[in-house]
Amino acid sequence: MTQDQRITKGNETKERILAASIRICAEEGIEGLSAKKIADFLGISKSNVFHHFGSVDELLNVMFETILVSLVKPIKSHHGPNLKAFLSFLGESIYSLSEEEKGTYSVLLNFYNFSLYNEKYKAYLLKTKNEVIDAIATQLSRYSSQKRERLLKVSEMIIMTLDGYGLHFLLETDLDNFKEIWTLQVDAWQSLLK
Image (cartoon, rainbow, N blue to C red; front, top):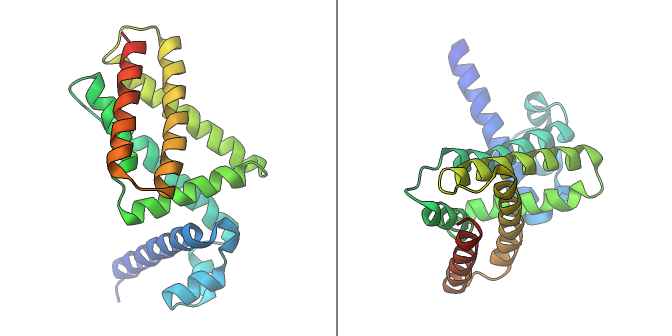
């Protein structure tokens, strides 16, 4: 096996470990994650897990960062034609989740709870929250002439609503109801941003 093939195989194993960890945390919570469970789930050795991630704590850090980056990226890159389209996109990002994405979102909610008692994760989560608020406000500025301060406040309202919306969508997936509720929210935010 060439050096490039070993690197590719190692990267694939690292991605599999990360995906398995997300799945385990989605089903059992963050406290349920262990190197043994990951190894058993993937049919690899615990030493292989530790080869790619020095500790379960390091794995949690990478998992947390990966999930949070995946939240910010689509917001920053969205290029809808108008305010309504952008706000609708935000709601759709919750109620159109695949089963795998629902698991990842569940892990994010676990991190929220975990962050209440862990200062390191709390600081990182709040930093990312501010990045998401800033990304939403930047997008809103494309469609609204409101001052930046107001756009930031509305963006914070949006992110708080998305958090609750996502939690309730995980509990009961009445898609038509959630679409209707989100449409009402979109109308309300549009009036705030006129």
